[in-house]
Length: 87
Image 1 (tube, rainbow, N blue to C red):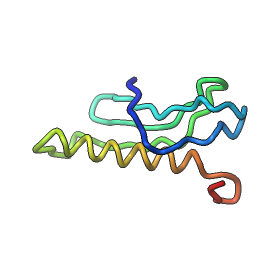
Image 2 (cartoon, rainbow, N blue to C red):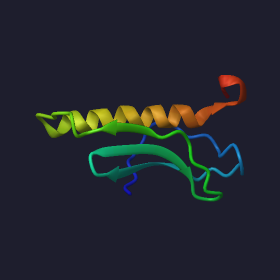
Image 3 (tube, rainbow, N blue to C red):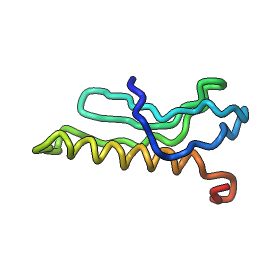
Image 4 (tube, rainbow, N blue to C red):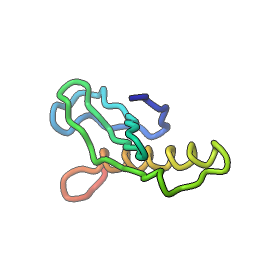
């Protein structure tokens, strides 16, 4: 797994309260999974995935742009709290 830099500020873990969650990228054959993971308690946020088998990226920047957007979506999902409110 690699850990991309994300401008999105991650809130503390909703389960243990620690502030050491990170956006992680997991590459598996033909797919990329991006999610937030708390290294204290192991909580994991929603997985945002992309199927790469059917996509064509004429330039490397295209896939990087998509991964940045997916990282933002994973961070946004992590930051949502009970009742669908971001607090």
